[in-house]
Length: 155
Image 1 (spheres, rainbow, N blue to C red):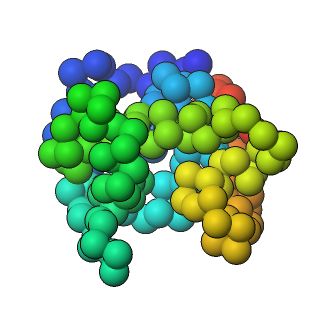
Image 2: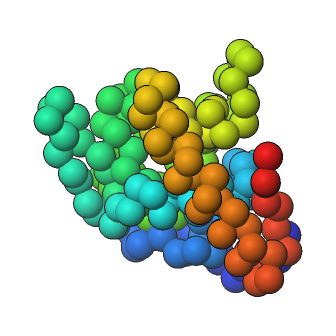
Image 3: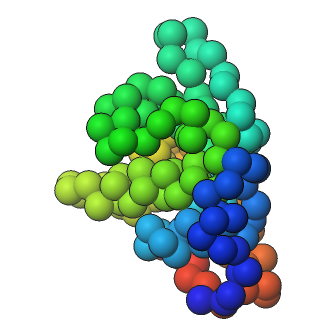
């Protein structure tokens, strides 16, 4: 992997995520960088952001990680909500962790359906998200390959 010039201390700092730290998070969690960047593009969150949903949950920061997902999958690991909300690169790493979990789930679903499970496992919502995810992943893959030497996926 290319040296992205991000120290461990800087990676976990209270600051917005950058393209470089999203790529680093993808490498750390062994997921395709283009897919993780596509998730960030679709989710469109900002550092520190908390978006309230009609169902009483909220979506947190860059990768819009839902508080229900946070409570079920991240809080038991000791992840503090404040860190998820304000440490942008950490938010990216946790999104990569969740993406990897979805990709490794057993079953007959294809790669893109599993990747879109990051957003929803409900077929109609997954299909809409998946279409956006494939298109943006391809765009990010093309950009990454001309800029960095990291793994991308066109599955």
